Image (cartoon, rainbow over all chains, first blue to last red; front, side, top):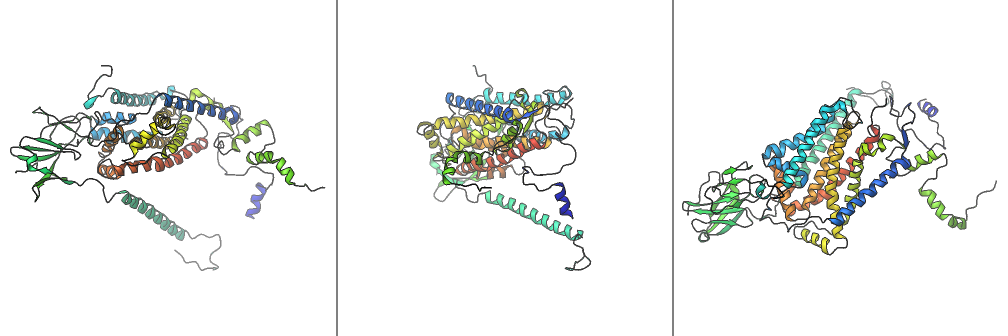
Amino acid sequence: MHVAKKEEIFPIDPNKTYSLMAIVEGDSLQVDKDPGDTVSSWPNLVLRELLLFLVVGIAVVAVSLLFNAPLEEPANALHSTNPAKAPWYFVGIQELVSYSAFLGGIVAPAGIVLSLLFLPYLDRNPAGVGVWFAKERRVATTLFTVFVVSMLVLIVIGQFLRGPNWTLYLPWK
Amino acid sequence: MELNHCGGAATMPGDVDEGRRKFVKKVTVATLALGVGGVALQTGRFLNPNVLYEPARAFKVGELASFPIGSRIVIEGRGVEIVREREGMHAVSLVCTHLGCLVKPVENNPDVGYACPCHGSTFALKGEVLGGPAPKDLPWYEMYMDHTGAIVVDTSKVNRERTKLVV
Amino acid sequence: MSATVYTIRDSIKNLPKNIRSSVVRPVEGTQEQARAAAVFGNVFLHIHPARVHENSLRFSYTLGLGLISFYLFLILSVSGTLLMFYYTPSTQLAYHNMKDLEYVVSFGVILRNIHRWSAHAMVACVFLHMCRVFYTGSYKAPREFNWVVGVCLLLMTLFLSFTGYLLPWDQLAFWAITVGSNIAAYAPWIGEKIRFVILGGNEVGQMALIRFYVLHVALLPVVALILMGIHFWRIRKDGGLSRPAAE
Protein backbone atom coordinates (compact mmCIF):
# COMPACT_ATOMS: atom_id res chain seq x y z
CA MET A 1 0.00 0.00 0.00
CA HIS A 2 2.61 2.44 1.22
CA VAL A 3 5.06 1.67 -1.54
CA ALA A 4 2.47 1.87 -4.28
CA LYS A 5 1.45 5.33 -3.13
CA LYS A 6 5.04 6.55 -3.28
CA GLU A 7 5.43 5.36 -6.82
CA GLU A 8 2.36 7.30 -7.77
CA ILE A 9 3.90 10.61 -6.78
CA PHE A 10 7.42 9.87 -7.94
CA PRO A 11 7.13 7.53 -10.91
CA ILE A 12 10.33 5.81 -11.92
CA ASP A 13 11.28 7.31 -15.23
CA PRO A 14 14.47 6.27 -17.01
CA ASN A 15 14.67 9.68 -18.67
CA LYS A 16 14.64 11.49 -15.37
CA THR A 17 17.92 13.31 -14.70
CA TYR A 18 16.93 14.70 -11.29
CA SER A 19 15.97 13.06 -8.05
CA LEU A 20 14.10 14.05 -4.93
CA MET A 21 16.54 14.95 -2.19
CA ALA A 22 14.27 16.23 0.55
CA ILE A 23 10.82 17.59 1.19
CA VAL A 24 10.86 20.82 3.14
CA GLU A 25 8.07 22.78 4.72
CA GLY A 26 7.60 26.49 4.40
CA ASP A 27 8.93 28.59 1.59
CA SER A 28 12.53 28.79 0.54
CA LEU A 29 14.03 31.82 -1.07
CA GLN A 30 13.23 30.56 -4.53
CA VAL A 31 9.71 29.16 -4.01
CA ASP A 32 7.03 31.13 -5.85
CA LYS A 33 9.52 33.73 -6.89
CA ASP A 34 10.61 34.45 -10.41
CA PRO A 35 14.34 34.37 -11.10
CA GLY A 36 14.20 38.10 -11.85
CA ASP A 37 17.27 39.37 -10.02
CA THR A 38 19.37 36.27 -10.59
CA VAL A 39 21.90 35.50 -13.28
CA SER A 40 23.40 32.17 -14.23
CA SER A 41 26.55 31.30 -12.28
CA TRP A 42 28.34 30.26 -15.44
CA PRO A 43 29.79 32.46 -16.76
CA ASN A 44 28.87 35.47 -14.58
CA LEU A 45 30.11 34.25 -11.19
CA VAL A 46 32.70 31.65 -12.16
CA LEU A 47 34.62 33.93 -14.50
CA ARG A 48 34.77 36.64 -11.84
CA GLU A 49 36.10 34.08 -9.38
CA LEU A 50 38.78 32.90 -11.79
CA LEU A 51 39.74 36.51 -12.45
CA LEU A 52 40.11 37.10 -8.70
CA PHE A 53 42.34 34.03 -8.42
CA LEU A 54 44.53 35.45 -11.16
CA VAL A 55 44.81 38.76 -9.29
CA VAL A 56 45.59 37.06 -5.96
CA GLY A 57 48.17 34.79 -7.59
CA ILE A 58 49.92 37.67 -9.36
CA ALA A 59 49.94 39.78 -6.20
CA VAL A 60 51.42 36.99 -4.07
CA VAL A 61 54.12 36.14 -6.62
CA ALA A 62 54.96 39.82 -7.14
CA VAL A 63 55.36 40.47 -3.41
CA SER A 64 57.40 37.27 -3.06
CA LEU A 65 59.74 38.34 -5.85
CA LEU A 66 60.25 41.76 -4.29
CA PHE A 67 60.57 40.98 -0.58
CA ASN A 68 62.36 38.15 1.16
CA ALA A 69 60.81 36.46 4.17
CA PRO A 70 62.74 37.36 7.32
CA LEU A 71 65.21 34.85 8.73
CA GLU A 72 67.28 35.71 11.78
CA GLU A 73 70.18 33.88 13.43
CA PRO A 74 69.63 30.25 14.51
CA ALA A 75 67.53 29.80 17.63
CA ASN A 76 69.59 30.28 20.77
CA ALA A 77 68.05 29.57 24.14
CA LEU A 78 70.90 31.43 25.87
CA HIS A 79 70.18 34.86 24.44
CA SER A 80 66.79 36.53 24.32
CA THR A 81 66.29 38.84 21.40
CA ASN A 82 65.71 42.36 22.56
CA PRO A 83 62.81 42.98 22.29
CA ALA A 84 61.20 39.54 21.77
CA LYS A 85 58.02 40.06 19.80
CA ALA A 86 55.18 37.67 19.03
CA PRO A 87 53.88 37.49 15.42
CA TRP A 88 52.22 40.77 14.43
CA TYR A 89 48.66 39.51 14.90
CA PHE A 90 49.48 38.61 18.52
CA VAL A 91 51.50 41.76 19.21
CA GLY A 92 48.31 43.56 20.28
CA ILE A 93 47.74 40.83 22.87
CA GLN A 94 51.41 41.06 23.87
CA GLU A 95 51.02 44.81 24.35
CA LEU A 96 48.11 44.09 26.72
CA VAL A 97 50.20 41.39 28.41
CA SER A 98 52.92 43.93 29.13
CA TYR A 99 50.40 45.77 31.33
CA SER A 100 48.92 42.71 32.99
CA ALA A 101 49.68 39.12 32.01
CA PHE A 102 46.46 37.59 33.35
CA LEU A 103 44.05 40.33 32.23
CA GLY A 104 45.73 40.94 28.88
CA GLY A 105 46.79 37.39 28.09
CA ILE A 106 43.80 35.37 29.23
CA VAL A 107 40.78 37.52 30.11
CA ALA A 108 40.93 39.85 27.09
CA PRO A 109 41.43 37.17 24.37
CA ALA A 110 38.86 34.85 25.96
CA GLY A 111 36.43 37.75 26.19
CA ILE A 112 36.98 38.67 22.54
CA VAL A 113 36.52 35.09 21.28
CA LEU A 114 33.44 34.44 23.43
CA SER A 115 31.75 37.70 22.44
CA LEU A 116 32.45 36.98 18.77
CA LEU A 117 31.01 33.46 19.10
CA PHE A 118 27.84 34.65 20.83
CA LEU A 119 27.41 37.85 18.82
CA PRO A 120 24.68 36.56 16.44
CA TYR A 121 22.70 35.20 19.38
CA LEU A 122 22.91 38.46 21.32
CA ASP A 123 22.14 40.84 18.44
CA ARG A 124 18.80 39.49 17.23
CA ASN A 125 17.54 42.68 15.56
CA PRO A 126 16.94 41.68 11.93
CA ALA A 127 17.16 45.26 10.65
CA GLY A 128 19.92 46.40 8.35
CA VAL A 129 20.96 43.13 6.73
CA GLY A 130 22.77 43.37 3.42
CA VAL A 131 23.79 47.02 3.58
CA TRP A 132 27.17 48.42 4.54
CA PHE A 133 26.97 50.51 7.75
CA ALA A 134 23.17 50.36 7.88
CA LYS A 135 21.57 53.35 9.64
CA GLU A 136 19.53 51.04 11.88
CA ARG A 137 22.69 49.46 13.27
CA ARG A 138 24.60 52.56 14.31
CA VAL A 139 25.31 51.30 17.86
CA ALA A 140 26.57 47.90 16.71
CA THR A 141 28.69 49.49 13.98
CA THR A 142 30.22 51.96 16.43
CA LEU A 143 31.02 49.28 19.03
CA PHE A 144 32.65 47.01 16.47
CA THR A 145 34.65 49.89 15.00
CA VAL A 146 35.95 50.74 18.48
CA PHE A 147 37.03 47.09 18.86
CA VAL A 148 38.76 46.97 15.46
CA VAL A 149 40.48 50.34 15.89
CA SER A 150 41.73 49.50 19.38
CA MET A 151 43.11 46.17 18.10
CA LEU A 152 44.88 48.02 15.29
CA VAL A 153 46.25 50.70 17.63
CA LEU A 154 47.61 48.05 20.01
CA ILE A 155 49.21 46.18 17.11
CA VAL A 156 50.80 49.37 15.73
CA ILE A 157 52.14 50.35 19.17
CA GLY A 158 53.50 46.87 19.80
CA GLN A 159 54.94 46.36 16.35
CA PHE A 160 56.40 49.77 15.52
CA LEU A 161 56.67 51.84 18.69
CA ARG A 162 58.25 49.31 21.05
CA GLY A 163 62.00 49.20 21.12
CA PRO A 164 64.62 47.43 23.24
CA ASN A 165 63.43 46.61 26.78
CA TRP A 166 59.88 47.17 25.46
CA THR A 167 60.28 50.93 25.94
CA LEU A 168 58.26 53.30 23.82
CA TYR A 169 60.24 54.96 21.09
CA LEU A 170 59.46 56.73 17.88
CA PRO A 171 60.65 54.86 14.79
CA TRP A 172 61.90 57.99 13.01
CA LYS A 173 64.23 58.94 15.86
CA MET B 1 9.07 -2.86 30.60
CA GLU B 2 6.97 -5.65 29.22
CA LEU B 3 8.42 -8.78 27.72
CA ASN B 4 7.36 -9.57 24.18
CA HIS B 5 7.15 -13.15 23.08
CA CYS B 6 8.49 -13.76 19.68
CA GLY B 7 5.61 -14.21 17.29
CA GLY B 8 3.10 -13.72 20.10
CA ALA B 9 -0.34 -12.46 19.21
CA ALA B 10 -0.09 -9.59 21.69
CA THR B 11 2.34 -7.57 19.58
CA MET B 12 1.57 -6.29 16.13
CA PRO B 13 4.47 -5.57 13.78
CA GLY B 14 3.79 -1.83 14.06
CA ASP B 15 3.72 -1.75 17.86
CA VAL B 16 6.62 -0.10 19.64
CA ASP B 17 7.77 -0.90 23.15
CA GLU B 18 8.58 2.65 24.32
CA GLY B 19 10.22 1.57 27.56
CA ARG B 20 12.56 -0.80 25.81
CA ARG B 21 13.40 1.81 23.21
CA LYS B 22 14.24 4.41 25.86
CA PHE B 23 16.46 1.91 27.64
CA VAL B 24 18.34 1.01 24.48
CA LYS B 25 18.73 4.70 23.67
CA LYS B 26 20.08 5.48 27.13
CA VAL B 27 22.58 2.61 26.97
CA THR B 28 23.73 3.69 23.50
CA VAL B 29 24.19 7.32 24.51
CA ALA B 30 25.99 6.32 27.70
CA THR B 31 28.33 3.99 25.81
CA LEU B 32 29.05 6.68 23.24
CA ALA B 33 29.74 9.29 25.92
CA LEU B 34 31.98 6.86 27.78
CA GLY B 35 33.86 6.00 24.59
CA VAL B 36 34.35 9.58 23.46
CA GLY B 37 35.29 10.74 26.95
CA GLY B 38 37.69 7.85 27.38
CA VAL B 39 39.36 8.48 24.04
CA ALA B 40 39.71 12.20 24.83
CA LEU B 41 41.19 11.45 28.24
CA GLN B 42 43.62 8.82 26.97
CA THR B 43 44.65 11.06 24.06
CA GLY B 44 45.49 13.71 26.63
CA ARG B 45 47.55 11.17 28.59
CA PHE B 46 49.24 10.02 25.39
CA LEU B 47 50.25 13.60 24.55
CA ASN B 48 51.70 14.15 28.02
CA PRO B 49 55.38 13.17 27.66
CA ASN B 50 56.72 10.78 30.31
CA VAL B 51 60.37 11.16 29.43
CA LEU B 52 61.95 14.54 28.83
CA TYR B 53 65.13 14.80 26.82
CA GLU B 54 66.04 17.98 28.56
CA PRO B 55 69.08 18.75 30.69
CA ALA B 56 68.74 17.38 34.23
CA ARG B 57 67.14 19.81 36.65
CA ALA B 58 69.92 19.26 39.23
CA PHE B 59 73.42 20.02 37.98
CA LYS B 60 76.91 20.81 39.21
CA VAL B 61 78.03 24.39 38.71
CA GLY B 62 81.64 24.04 39.84
CA GLU B 63 83.97 24.11 42.81
CA LEU B 64 83.50 26.58 45.61
CA ALA B 65 86.76 28.25 44.64
CA SER B 66 85.32 29.40 41.31
CA PHE B 67 82.80 31.59 43.15
CA PRO B 68 84.81 34.20 45.05
CA ILE B 69 83.06 36.36 47.62
CA GLY B 70 81.31 39.28 45.95
CA SER B 71 80.99 37.56 42.58
CA ARG B 72 77.90 37.07 40.41
CA ILE B 73 78.40 34.31 37.87
CA VAL B 74 75.84 33.39 35.23
CA ILE B 75 75.69 29.66 34.44
CA GLU B 76 75.29 29.68 30.66
CA GLY B 77 72.47 27.52 29.32
CA ARG B 78 70.94 26.88 32.72
CA GLY B 79 69.17 30.17 33.34
CA VAL B 80 70.61 30.67 36.84
CA GLU B 81 73.06 33.05 38.38
CA ILE B 82 75.20 32.12 41.40
CA VAL B 83 75.62 35.05 43.74
CA ARG B 84 78.15 34.77 46.57
CA GLU B 85 78.18 37.35 49.28
CA ARG B 86 79.91 37.49 52.63
CA GLU B 87 76.94 35.82 54.39
CA GLY B 88 76.67 32.92 51.94
CA MET B 89 75.60 32.09 48.42
CA HIS B 90 72.35 31.58 46.52
CA ALA B 91 71.20 30.57 43.03
CA VAL B 92 68.67 32.93 41.48
CA SER B 93 66.60 32.08 38.40
CA LEU B 94 67.22 34.24 35.35
CA VAL B 95 63.95 33.22 33.66
CA CYS B 96 61.62 36.21 33.79
CA THR B 97 58.44 35.34 35.68
CA HIS B 98 56.48 37.37 33.15
CA LEU B 99 56.87 35.53 29.85
CA GLY B 100 60.01 33.45 30.15
CA CYS B 101 62.67 35.66 28.56
CA LEU B 102 66.16 35.57 30.08
CA VAL B 103 66.77 38.56 32.34
CA LYS B 104 70.13 40.30 32.13
CA PRO B 105 72.13 40.98 35.29
CA VAL B 106 72.64 44.72 35.70
CA GLU B 107 76.15 45.69 36.77
CA ASN B 108 77.12 48.75 38.78
CA ASN B 109 73.64 49.65 39.97
CA PRO B 110 72.96 49.11 43.68
CA ASP B 111 69.18 49.33 43.20
CA VAL B 112 68.50 47.20 40.11
CA GLY B 113 69.86 43.67 39.97
CA TYR B 114 68.21 42.29 36.83
CA ALA B 115 66.35 43.73 33.83
CA CYS B 116 64.25 41.79 31.33
CA PRO B 117 64.85 42.73 27.68
CA CYS B 118 61.41 41.60 26.51
CA HIS B 119 58.94 43.70 28.46
CA GLY B 120 61.09 45.81 30.73
CA SER B 121 60.52 44.12 34.10
CA THR B 122 63.20 44.99 36.64
CA PHE B 123 64.22 43.02 39.71
CA ALA B 124 66.29 43.84 42.79
CA LEU B 125 69.54 42.05 43.55
CA LYS B 126 67.69 39.47 45.63
CA GLY B 127 65.09 38.92 42.88
CA GLU B 128 62.18 41.04 44.14
CA VAL B 129 60.09 42.74 41.45
CA LEU B 130 60.87 46.44 41.20
CA GLY B 131 58.85 47.40 38.16
CA GLY B 132 57.29 46.20 34.92
CA PRO B 133 54.69 43.55 34.26
CA ALA B 134 56.35 40.63 36.09
CA PRO B 135 53.86 39.18 38.59
CA LYS B 136 56.29 37.31 40.86
CA ASP B 137 59.80 37.64 42.27
CA LEU B 138 62.61 35.67 40.63
CA PRO B 139 62.76 32.37 42.56
CA TRP B 140 65.83 31.08 44.34
CA TYR B 141 66.73 27.44 43.81
CA GLU B 142 67.96 24.91 46.34
CA MET B 143 71.71 24.40 46.27
CA TYR B 144 74.08 22.22 48.23
CA MET B 145 77.63 20.91 48.19
CA ASP B 146 77.97 17.24 47.23
CA HIS B 147 80.52 14.77 48.56
CA THR B 148 83.10 15.76 45.95
CA GLY B 149 82.98 19.36 47.06
CA ALA B 150 81.13 20.59 43.97
CA ILE B 151 78.28 23.06 44.26
CA VAL B 152 74.99 21.59 42.94
CA VAL B 153 71.89 23.60 41.98
CA ASP B 154 68.52 21.86 41.79
CA THR B 155 66.10 23.92 39.69
CA SER B 156 63.22 21.54 40.45
CA LYS B 157 63.20 22.74 44.07
CA VAL B 158 62.45 26.36 44.81
CA ASN B 159 64.05 27.81 47.92
CA ARG B 160 60.97 29.56 49.29
CA GLU B 161 62.59 30.73 52.53
CA ARG B 162 65.41 32.33 50.53
CA THR B 163 68.05 30.89 52.81
CA LYS B 164 71.64 31.28 51.78
CA LEU B 165 74.06 28.40 51.52
CA VAL B 166 76.65 29.13 54.17
CA VAL B 167 80.09 27.84 53.31
CA MET C 1 16.21 -2.55 -38.24
CA SER C 2 19.92 -2.92 -38.50
CA ALA C 3 22.14 -3.47 -35.48
CA THR C 4 24.90 -0.89 -35.01
CA VAL C 5 28.30 -2.35 -35.74
CA TYR C 6 31.03 -1.37 -33.29
CA THR C 7 34.32 -1.67 -35.11
CA ILE C 8 37.73 -1.01 -33.60
CA ARG C 9 38.35 1.32 -36.51
CA ASP C 10 35.44 3.54 -35.61
CA SER C 11 36.38 3.41 -31.95
CA ILE C 12 39.86 4.72 -32.70
CA LYS C 13 38.53 7.35 -35.07
CA ASN C 14 36.07 8.63 -32.49
CA LEU C 15 38.43 8.24 -29.54
CA PRO C 16 38.90 11.96 -28.75
CA LYS C 17 35.20 12.67 -29.10
CA ASN C 18 34.23 9.71 -26.94
CA ILE C 19 36.73 10.52 -24.22
CA ARG C 20 35.55 14.10 -24.19
CA SER C 21 31.89 13.19 -23.97
CA SER C 22 32.60 10.71 -21.17
CA VAL C 23 34.36 13.36 -19.08
CA VAL C 24 32.13 16.33 -19.85
CA ARG C 25 28.55 15.23 -20.22
CA PRO C 26 27.04 16.76 -23.34
CA VAL C 27 23.89 18.73 -22.68
CA GLU C 28 21.21 19.16 -25.27
CA GLY C 29 18.82 21.98 -24.64
CA THR C 30 18.62 25.70 -24.33
CA GLN C 31 21.60 27.88 -23.59
CA GLU C 32 20.22 28.32 -20.09
CA GLN C 33 20.23 24.58 -19.48
CA ALA C 34 23.74 24.24 -20.85
CA ARG C 35 24.95 27.00 -18.51
CA ALA C 36 23.32 25.37 -15.52
CA ALA C 37 24.82 22.01 -16.50
CA ALA C 38 28.27 23.62 -16.70
CA VAL C 39 28.00 24.38 -12.98
CA PHE C 40 26.36 21.32 -11.48
CA GLY C 41 28.02 18.89 -13.86
CA ASN C 42 31.46 19.91 -12.59
CA VAL C 43 32.70 18.63 -9.28
CA PHE C 44 34.75 21.78 -8.64
CA LEU C 45 31.89 24.12 -9.48
CA HIS C 46 28.92 22.23 -8.09
CA ILE C 47 29.24 24.03 -4.76
CA HIS C 48 27.76 27.00 -6.63
CA PRO C 49 24.05 27.31 -7.31
CA ALA C 50 23.05 27.29 -10.98
CA ARG C 51 21.87 30.86 -10.61
CA VAL C 52 23.08 33.54 -8.22
CA HIS C 53 21.56 36.80 -7.09
CA GLU C 54 22.97 39.87 -8.79
CA ASN C 55 23.89 41.33 -5.40
CA SER C 56 26.31 38.45 -4.77
CA LEU C 57 28.33 39.57 -7.79
CA ARG C 58 28.78 43.15 -6.59
CA PHE C 59 32.46 43.45 -5.75
CA SER C 60 31.77 46.56 -3.67
CA TYR C 61 29.51 44.43 -1.46
CA THR C 62 31.79 41.45 -0.66
CA LEU C 63 35.18 42.88 -1.67
CA GLY C 64 35.93 39.22 -2.48
CA LEU C 65 37.53 38.80 0.94
CA GLY C 66 36.18 35.34 1.72
CA LEU C 67 37.22 34.02 -1.65
CA ILE C 68 40.66 35.65 -1.38
CA SER C 69 41.12 33.93 2.00
CA PHE C 70 40.23 30.59 0.41
CA TYR C 71 42.59 31.20 -2.51
CA LEU C 72 45.38 32.04 -0.07
CA PHE C 73 44.66 28.78 1.76
CA LEU C 74 45.04 26.93 -1.55
CA ILE C 75 48.29 28.74 -2.34
CA LEU C 76 49.54 27.96 1.18
CA SER C 77 48.61 24.27 0.83
CA VAL C 78 50.48 23.92 -2.44
CA SER C 79 53.57 25.92 -1.44
CA GLY C 80 53.60 24.28 1.99
CA THR C 81 53.48 20.79 0.51
CA LEU C 82 56.41 21.65 -1.75
CA LEU C 83 58.40 23.09 1.18
CA MET C 84 57.85 19.84 3.11
CA PHE C 85 60.06 18.04 0.59
CA TYR C 86 63.06 20.01 1.86
CA TYR C 87 62.19 20.47 5.51
CA THR C 88 63.11 18.31 8.52
CA PRO C 89 61.46 19.12 11.85
CA SER C 90 64.68 18.77 13.83
CA THR C 91 66.43 21.41 15.91
CA GLN C 92 69.71 20.32 14.29
CA LEU C 93 68.50 20.56 10.69
CA ALA C 94 65.56 22.96 10.48
CA TYR C 95 67.62 26.14 10.28
CA HIS C 96 70.01 24.60 7.75
CA ASN C 97 66.99 23.62 5.64
CA MET C 98 65.99 27.29 5.63
CA LYS C 99 69.44 28.27 4.40
CA ASP C 100 69.32 25.51 1.80
CA LEU C 101 65.98 26.79 0.57
CA GLU C 102 67.53 30.21 0.24
CA TYR C 103 70.77 29.28 -1.50
CA VAL C 104 70.62 25.73 -2.89
CA VAL C 105 67.08 24.67 -3.79
CA SER C 106 65.75 25.85 -7.16
CA PHE C 107 63.02 28.43 -6.52
CA GLY C 108 63.37 27.63 -2.81
CA VAL C 109 63.56 31.23 -1.71
CA ILE C 110 60.54 32.34 -3.72
CA LEU C 111 58.55 29.35 -2.49
CA ARG C 112 59.34 30.26 1.10
CA ASN C 113 58.46 33.90 0.40
CA ILE C 114 55.14 32.87 -1.16
CA HIS C 115 54.34 30.73 1.87
CA ARG C 116 55.30 33.38 4.40
CA TRP C 117 53.60 36.36 2.75
CA SER C 118 50.44 34.38 1.91
CA ALA C 119 50.23 33.34 5.56
CA HIS C 120 50.37 36.95 6.73
CA ALA C 121 47.90 37.96 4.03
CA MET C 122 45.51 35.18 4.99
CA VAL C 123 45.37 36.30 8.63
CA ALA C 124 44.63 39.84 7.44
CA CYS C 125 42.03 38.76 4.84
CA VAL C 126 40.16 36.46 7.21
CA PHE C 127 39.98 39.29 9.74
CA LEU C 128 38.82 41.78 7.10
CA HIS C 129 36.27 39.24 5.87
CA MET C 130 34.88 39.11 9.41
CA CYS C 131 34.68 42.91 9.44
CA ARG C 132 32.80 42.87 6.12
CA VAL C 133 30.32 40.32 7.43
CA PHE C 134 29.80 42.40 10.57
CA TYR C 135 29.36 45.75 8.86
CA THR C 136 26.82 44.32 6.38
CA GLY C 137 24.89 42.60 9.18
CA SER C 138 25.35 39.28 7.45
CA TYR C 139 25.61 37.27 10.69
CA LYS C 140 21.92 37.75 11.46
CA ALA C 141 19.30 35.01 11.19
CA PRO C 142 19.38 32.62 9.42
CA ARG C 143 23.18 32.92 9.15
CA GLU C 144 24.10 32.84 12.88
CA PHE C 145 25.70 29.42 12.78
CA ASN C 146 27.81 30.22 9.75
CA TRP C 147 29.23 33.20 11.66
CA VAL C 148 30.20 30.82 14.47
CA VAL C 149 31.91 28.52 11.96
CA GLY C 150 33.66 31.59 10.58
CA VAL C 151 34.98 32.58 14.02
CA CYS C 152 36.33 29.01 14.39
CA LEU C 153 38.01 29.40 10.99
CA LEU C 154 39.61 32.66 12.15
CA LEU C 155 41.00 30.83 15.19
CA MET C 156 42.25 27.99 12.94
CA THR C 157 44.00 30.55 10.74
CA LEU C 158 45.70 32.08 13.79
CA PHE C 159 46.75 28.65 15.14
CA LEU C 160 48.06 27.60 11.73
CA SER C 161 50.08 30.78 11.42
CA PHE C 162 51.37 30.54 14.99
CA THR C 163 52.45 26.88 14.69
CA GLY C 164 54.18 27.67 11.40
CA TYR C 165 56.06 30.52 13.05
CA LEU C 166 58.30 28.14 15.02
CA LEU C 167 59.35 25.94 12.10
CA PRO C 168 62.30 28.02 10.70
CA TRP C 169 63.92 27.64 14.15
CA ASP C 170 65.53 31.06 14.14
CA GLN C 171 65.68 33.58 16.98
CA LEU C 172 62.45 35.25 15.84
CA ALA C 173 60.66 31.87 15.96
CA PHE C 174 62.15 30.65 19.22
CA TRP C 175 61.41 33.71 21.32
CA ALA C 176 58.00 34.41 19.77
CA ILE C 177 56.91 30.88 20.70
CA THR C 178 58.53 31.15 24.16
CA VAL C 179 56.57 34.34 24.79
CA GLY C 180 53.36 32.95 23.23
CA SER C 181 53.38 29.69 25.18
CA ASN C 182 54.06 31.54 28.42
CA ILE C 183 50.98 33.68 27.79
CA ALA C 184 48.96 30.43 27.65
CA ALA C 185 50.49 29.40 30.98
CA TYR C 186 48.66 32.28 32.69
CA ALA C 187 45.32 30.49 32.22
CA PRO C 188 43.98 29.64 35.66
CA TRP C 189 44.43 26.08 37.04
CA ILE C 190 45.37 24.34 33.80
CA GLY C 191 47.64 26.96 32.22
CA GLU C 192 50.94 25.32 33.24
CA LYS C 193 49.66 21.91 32.11
CA ILE C 194 48.54 23.31 28.73
CA ARG C 195 51.96 24.84 28.21
CA PHE C 196 53.68 21.57 29.16
CA VAL C 197 51.57 19.51 26.73
CA ILE C 198 51.82 22.02 23.86
CA LEU C 199 55.59 22.20 24.18
CA GLY C 200 56.01 18.54 25.17
CA GLY C 201 58.33 19.69 27.95
CA ASN C 202 59.32 22.62 30.10
CA GLU C 203 61.09 24.58 27.39
CA VAL C 204 60.90 25.15 23.64
CA GLY C 205 62.97 22.30 22.20
CA GLN C 206 62.86 19.29 19.90
CA MET C 207 59.55 18.04 21.31
CA ALA C 208 57.93 21.44 20.80
CA LEU C 209 59.23 21.61 17.22
CA ILE C 210 57.81 18.23 16.22
CA ARG C 211 54.49 18.97 17.93
CA PHE C 212 54.13 22.30 16.17
CA TYR C 213 55.10 20.64 12.88
CA VAL C 214 52.46 17.91 13.15
CA LEU C 215 49.81 20.46 14.12
CA HIS C 216 50.88 22.73 11.28
CA VAL C 217 51.04 20.24 8.41
CA ALA C 218 48.43 17.65 9.37
CA LEU C 219 45.96 18.28 12.14
CA LEU C 220 45.08 21.96 11.77
CA PRO C 221 44.81 21.99 7.95
CA VAL C 222 42.40 19.03 8.05
CA VAL C 223 40.25 20.70 10.70
CA ALA C 224 40.33 23.96 8.73
CA LEU C 225 39.33 22.12 5.54
CA ILE C 226 36.36 20.43 7.23
CA LEU C 227 35.23 23.74 8.71
CA MET C 228 35.58 25.38 5.28
CA GLY C 229 33.40 22.67 3.75
CA ILE C 230 30.71 23.38 6.35
CA HIS C 231 31.15 27.14 5.88
CA PHE C 232 30.62 27.03 2.10
CA TRP C 233 27.79 24.51 2.30
CA ARG C 234 25.98 26.65 4.84
CA ILE C 235 26.18 29.71 2.57
CA ARG C 236 23.84 27.96 0.14
CA LYS C 237 21.69 26.32 2.82
CA ASP C 238 21.19 29.73 4.45
CA GLY C 239 19.97 31.19 1.17
CA GLY C 240 23.13 32.47 -0.50
CA LEU C 241 25.02 35.63 0.37
CA SER C 242 23.13 38.19 2.41
CA ARG C 243 21.46 40.99 0.54
CA PRO C 244 19.05 43.83 1.31
CA ALA C 245 15.45 42.75 1.80
CA ALA C 246 13.48 43.07 -1.43
CA GLU C 247 11.09 46.03 -1.55
